[in-house]
Amino acid sequence: MLLSLVVHTHSLRYWLPAAVMMGTAPVYLLTWAAWRLLSMLLPARLYHIMDDRLYTIYQSVVLFFFESYTGVEIVIYGDLPEEKENMIYLSNHQCTVDWIIADMLAIRQNALGHVRYVLKDGLKWLPLYGWYFSQHGGIYVKRSAKFNEKAMANKLRQQIEVGTPAYLVIFPEGTRYNPDNPQVIAASQAYACKEGLPELRHTMSPRVKATRVAINTMRDHLDAVYDITVAYEGTINSNGHRATAPSMPEFLCRECPRIHIFFARVDVKEVPEEAIFLKRWLHERFELKDKLLKEFYEAEDEQKRYKFPGEGRSSQLSLMRTLPSLLFLGGLTVPLLLTESGRKIYMKTWIYGTLVGWLWVNIRP
Image (cartoon, rainbow, N blue to C red; front, side, top):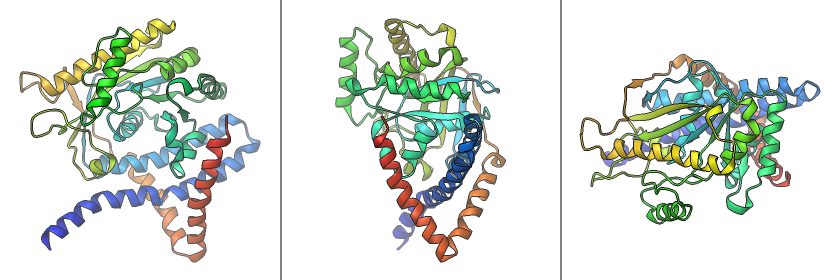
């Protein structure tokens, strides 16, 4: 009986926030769709400004749960600019929570609505979210020879033309680093060896295509590249070795007490233009990440272990940055569910929104 209660309570830690985040999604989509229709006769720039504001509202709800609800401590190493910049965000990739890390940094620069992702093509099938990410400016890419550079460049140019601020998130590794998948890590190291590049132990070898297209297409629009290295405290197994980073459900169950984020700003003028030099530059950035993570997990001095070099600053997000959005979207959702007609609209939004989304992302070039 007691064990059952403990298991039930633990699962509620995940299901409660998941229910709220997914439950408010149809109302958010309806609000966005109404604005999309109203803005069709207006300049595109006005649509994107309001779209960013609406996106800020929903992502603030997400951050309420991933920061305030979990109580995770965010420790930042380096000086995150207080003002917004047009930038590309390059990070190591370990788990789905990495997406939320970009939001955590963006909201601290008042740039949450500007966040757009370069995502692997399979994620376009996510109900509602997959389609909307594309509408918000997200870019789906396929790996290797199927990567469509022209389509990505065209979408980026469209955003530049309407003056959309750039906060483009890219995970150059293309797949997650998972210590439980040594074959994938070995294949990544073999790729580096084949290319004449140093092998990496704590990250995957970065692939340069998406980064190259983004930087070269947007170079005149960019201020900087943000080089982000993330480590999740507590990801150590019983043998003292690095373990798998937490999934979203595990994170929401408060299984990660602290996130360490090493921030480095690179002026876009320092990034090479030529493809061969850009490839080498990107790998060198990941060599630095690899050294940081090696120090984090394997430092001989226990006082230096589980932290990055330098002084880390704990950054707490004010509840007033996220709670109002939760109350706003919740206030729109609950009345809709209290009536039979409202529930029908709600369910139709989920069903038709998903179907339209799947069609949209598959008929576009």
